[in-house]
Each structure stands twice: as structure tokens, then as C-alpha cells.
Image 1 (cartoon, protein in one colour):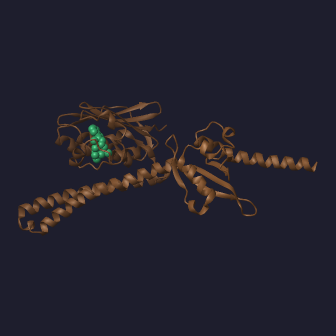
Image 2 (cartoon, helix red, strand yellow; image 1 turned 90 degrees about the horizontal axis):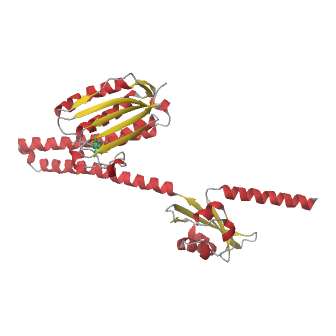
Image 3 (cartoon, helix red, strand yellow; image 1 turned 60 degrees about the horizontal axis):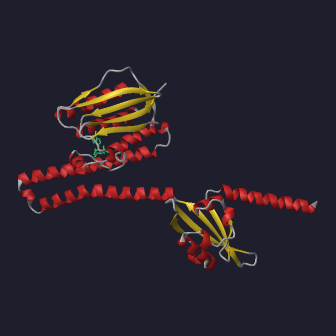
Length: 357
Ligand code: ADP
């Protein structure tokens, strides 16, 4: 009976261990001193590109691991544990980044009997790190350009140009333009960072918002700018529509879209602001007859600092952050953005928001 109990308890422990290992998202590999696989879980089998662990158990690492860097790493862990404390990052055949960590296994007498290798998928982290690096590089570049220009003109003024009133006024005008630009970039960056910090709707202050009122307010704000280019803003009458959201943020998002429509349209064209209902969602669509955007740019224009025509955007006072802000505002209110466009014919940007019951 005692033997029976023992066997049952050993079996239970083994099953538990196997269940834990096979349900881990990390890949776990054990190798013995002969560099043969003594244990490997489901995740590791998949990372190594094999169908089942049974087929590879007992095989040498050289025959089942195609990654030479990983083979060398395992050999190093078996021979010199201290050299590999940091671990390594490798890429598997699907392009996933795996962080590999190794620890030598030892028996009760302290002799090394093998090595335990843990593989952790860090693709998402790598991706975020790349985005962060790109973002920092972009911000620095965007800020550096106006600062360099401001410095240059201030130096010219100090070197004597200030004596000539015409030059002085012209250079001060340029300095003002570029400092306004710096201010606009910083303001947009702060807006984005505030939007990212919101964790739930209560922090933003949600209320029942009448979209028709939002549209009328934005038209009021843009009418002068549009008139300067003889652009007409149209708004077909529709029944009143409500969403649960934040009216200031919605106004800001719609304003960005209408300002873009004005910026990227030629004189004597039309912009239409349409409200429509689609299933359980309200759609706010800004249609212009402007330059349009080529197909290859459409998936990227909502990224920070992405511009189709950099020179034109800068000339129009754009920061390259407007559409990223629109996307974030709509997302924090549970919606999404859509765009369709045709070069030379115009674009239609839509904000799709859940309708208030
Ligand atoms: P910007 O400050 O440069 O306008 P946005 O993030 O608002 O930055 O827009 C990103 C880019 O998308 C713009 O630089 C422009 O190339 C393009 N774009 C945005 N709206 C329109 C539009 N209505 N028509 C044509 N191109 C547009």
C-alpha cells in the first residue's frame, strides 16, 4: 500500500510539473552534459520549429537547434555559467525576437549535471523599443530645425543686421514664425501625452454630446480661414445625433480634420461635413476636393510626424501630429478613424463613434 501511495504521489507530481511546463508561454529546454535534450516544453518545441517534443528528446542540440548562436550559448552555459548571466537575444524563423536565459543545473553535491534554457518572446517589447527610438529621433529632428533657424537669425541680428530696420523686422518675423512652430509642436506633443495617460472615461469627463452642435462650432471657427481661400464649407441638415464623449476633444479632432481639408485644398473648392448613422455608430465625415493622398500613404498618415509632402505641410504650419491626435481622441471615446482618398480628386476622413442610446 505504501509503495502504491508513493507511486501515485510521484505520478501526481510529474503530471503537475508537465502541466506547468506545457502551459508556460516561455520555452523551457533542459540539456544534459552530453548536450542532449533531456526535457523540452511545448513552447520551446514551437520556437525551435519542431512538431512534437517526443521526436527531439534525446537528440543533440546540434541536430535539433538550427540557430548556431543558441547552440554556442547552451555550450557556454554548460561550461561557464558566469560568462552568460545577461543572456542573448536571437531571432527565430518567423522573425520573432527571443530572449534566451541560461542557468546550469547541479546535483546535491554541487556538480553540474546540465543546463536549463528559458526562451522568452520579446518581439512586442522590441517593437515598442523601436517605436520609442524612432519617436525620440523624430521629435529631436522636428525641434532642432526651428531652433537652428532661430539661432541663426538671432546671431545675424547680433552681428549688425539689427541696425537696418528693414532687415531687423524681416528677421524678427522669421524668428516669430519658427518660435510659433516650436510652440505648436510642443502643444501637440503635450496633447498626445495627455491623451495617452487617460486610463478610463471618468478621467476625461464624458457626457452626452450633440454632434450637430460640435459641427456648427467647428464651422464657426474655420469659416474665416476657408473664406481666405474661397472655400465653401457645406453641412447638410440631418436629425440630431448624440454620442457619449467629451465635447472639447471632439471639437478639437473635427477642427484638425477641417483645418487639414482647408490646408490641402486649392482655392474655390468645397468641404462637406456630413453626419450619418451606421449600425450602432455615428459617422462624422469631412470630405474635401483637395490634393488627395496616394494609396501607399493611407495606412501611415495617422502615425506621428508622418507627412506625404513635408515641405507643403511645413509651409502650411503643420506639425505632422494632427491626425495622430484625431486618432487618439476618437479611440479614447471608443471609436475609430477611416480614410479614403484619390489623388487629384480629394479625401474623406471619417470619425466613427458609438451612438448614445
Ligand atoms: P500636418 O500637420 O502635416 O497636416 P497631419 O497629421 O494633420 O499633419 O497630417 C499628416 C499628413 O497627411 C499631412 O502632412 C498631409 O500630407 C496628409 N493629409 C492630411 N489631411 C489631408 C487632406 N485632407 N488632404 C490631403 N492630404 C492630407
